Amino acid sequence: MSYSLTISSLTTTQVAAISTAEIALLDGTDIPQFNTAQFAMLSGTATGQLAALTTTAAAAILSTQIAALTTTQLIAIETEDFEVLLFPTLKAISPANFSALTTAQINAITGANIVGLTSSQIQALTTAQIAAITPTKFSSILDATTGLTTSNVTGITTAQIAQIGGAALTAITTSVIAALTTAQIEALDASRIPSLTSAQVAALTTAQIAPIETRDIAAMASEDLLGLTTASLAVFSTAQIVAISRANVAGLTTAAIDALSTTQIRVLTIDAIAGLTTTQIQAIATEDLFELNATQFAAISATQAAAFTTNQAAGFPGSPGIQGLTTSAIQGLSATAGNNVVAALGSGTFSGLSSTQIGALTTTQVTRIETVDVAAITANATPGFTSSQLTVMDTAQIAAIQVSNISGLSTAALTGLRTDQAAVLSPAAAFCSRPHSLGP
Image (cartoon, rainbow, N blue to C red; front, side, top):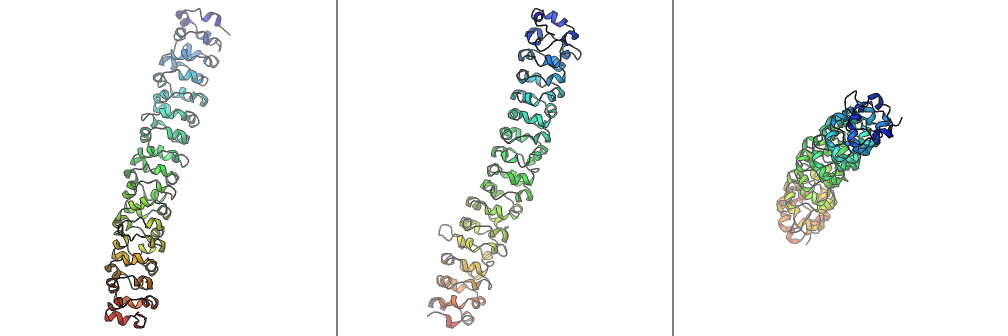
């Protein structure tokens, strides 16, 4: 029934006197006839005029009309009426009034309409109101999640977190990210974690880092890992470290690499080690290199090996760790005047080299071996020396070969010895060698 012909002529006093029974007869064509002042006179009690509106009438409420209502009046509007309010009308509710709505009213807003909420209204939501939104509906306000605050973000349920899309997650401010609870962080699955920006990852607290599941760590993009601070990486469990993929390990900063503990270094996978850049290789702390096992050393390429510095050389382990270094990696070790890694390797490292590794050394590398390190080469490794290697050694190096190891040198290797090299061999060494194989 339409009262549009008479409503506009009523005074505010007359409007206030309309019975709830008459209010219940109003339809969608009647409501727009109320001017702002008239609509503001409708009573806002549980049994008042606003509560008496039908859903048909409520659906016709204008934005100017709802903006004129007090919090008391808004709360009086029945829950089912909030289901039919259009989003232009909802947007007209002030943030202060919006925060006063009941959780039932908030939850009654449809997904199609809730998308129209403004950032200011989202900011005004209480934690209880946030939690009242069903996960499905929550996904409808994702475009407005930039409105989340550090105060109300804790109201998001883990079920709602699971509805956050990548674009919406990226839009959340770093301060809000830092305010997420550990349960909320844990609820972010592998399909969403890659959407975090490096700035957001950097904002994560150490307490938030701990609950991130290994599958989520594995899903992190290299730019995400770039955001990890040294403090954040320091609390990575060994399982989390293991989860860092080869494709993404390059995202770790050199500071983060340097900050890895010996325990963390020990569990780096061969894929992760193979994925390290040369700059990252140079960032590995000397004491951490000593912790690498043979399997890990085997993952180091010639290009990576060439990046090692003389300072790091002191941290190379002996057997069995060093024996994992491939022959190509061995040949990659620098022997230049400016970065003489070979000369800087300790005797403990040389004592751990195999005969195959010794045989892989280039002639330039051989000339850089310190005499004390030549003496450290074991009897098992000595047979690895080739003729071309021995002929470039100086007499001090030749003299440093352990007497007991001379017999391990092959006839072919001894054939090329120069006279001056043969001369420095001690009588015992000469006795152990093959005199007929010495050069003139």
